[in-house]
Amino acid sequence: MAELFDNIKQKDRVLLAAVDTGAFDVSASLDELEELVKTADGEPIIRVVQKRPSYDKATCIGSGRLKEIAELCQTNEIDRVIFDCELTATQIRNIEDVCGVFTIDRTMLILDIFASHAKTHEGRLQVEIAQNKYRLPRLAGMGMNLSRLGGGIGTRGPGETKLETDKRHIRARIAALTDELHEIEKRRDMMRKRRKKDGVLTAAIVGYTNAGKSTLLNALTEAGVLSEDKLFATLETTSRAIELPDGRSVTLIDTVGFISRLPHHLVEAFKSTLEEAAQADVIIHVVDLSNAGCENQAEVTRKLLSELGCDGIPVVTVFNKCDKVPYADALEKEKGENEVIISAKSGEGLDKMLSAVAAALPSTCTRCRLLLPFDKAGLLSTIRIDGRVYSEEYTADGIAVDVLVDNKVYYLIEEYKVNSVNKL
Image (cartoon, rainbow, N blue to C red; front, top):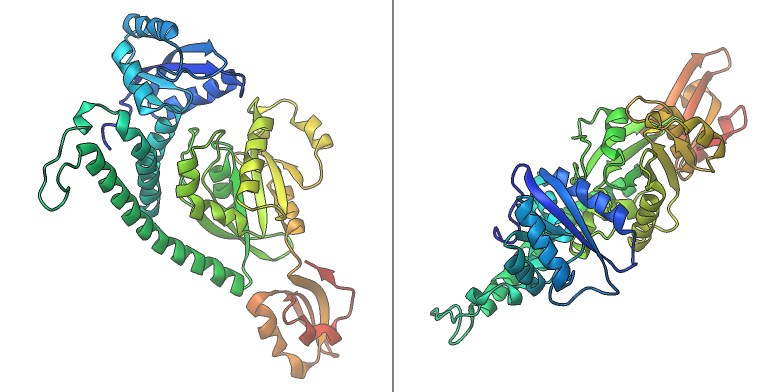
């Protein structure tokens, strides 16, 4: 494990390589890969792009281009070569044989970043499962040292190769980690069911990595979540309750960021965490307005949300970092329904965002004015359990109150209302 997912050392000099098959925007993808390298404390030095109709089975990029990369590695003192696609173990071995430089791919880099940023027990479990699933099919091409006979007594069986032994150990480790993760998922699912049973409203904050989700959560709740200008700075979910302008309470849930071509193993490993969005009452989709590729990033997020089964859940799109763009005022006039322009850093537009979230949430409460007879004063205690009393005045005719009443108990007070209701 340590050999395959060796952490990039401080300021390793990195060569970025990509094959342009026309399947996606290679330039934008390399920009993102460069940011990933910086997040992993590497230093991108040079880029190499080769146009091909398809990936070369032996070297990914082609033997001629690979020789050029080998020369660049030598003249530029490159420590790492990172490919912007998934490599097979055979391709990695062939590239390293020619270049003489440690080589990894985009998925390995992302897994490395996740491993270094995972702080909780659940996060570490999820990352290790993803690493092992990625490693398992690649063992066969990792060298002759995995092909020798084991010769162990009682554990390997006669004639079982080192490769077969390693595969068996990895499968057993994946199974053990998965069982442990399932126990955590059960507890998470029980918490979700408890929130639903208690009528707790939830809003999942989702978006592309580094869009400002954690900064937004901190600005609204002072949660103290790590917020850095790096990709995947936050991996664990954080929940905090806030009060909306209409008086209702909603629990905000921060989630792991998305990225284009997010490795399948990570989606599977973090499925229980990402499902927070699928179980939410409303989704707050944060978009980095200052990023030139924000439209593509937003589309990646929308597709992943659809894959997670989030279709049908109300979405409030929040264009963040308006303080970094000169055209924010013009966009304010063009924004559509359920779209808000904000700056989580400065606080601009947060009140509008909260109002939009309140409007998007399902109707659960009713705000109205009541005139309660004195002998019905006990209803105020019932209202306060899941609602709120804004004002209370004792008059000659009874108790005049302005209240937010949970719809479950609205029938108890309906006859005492003195004005039209406002469904919230």
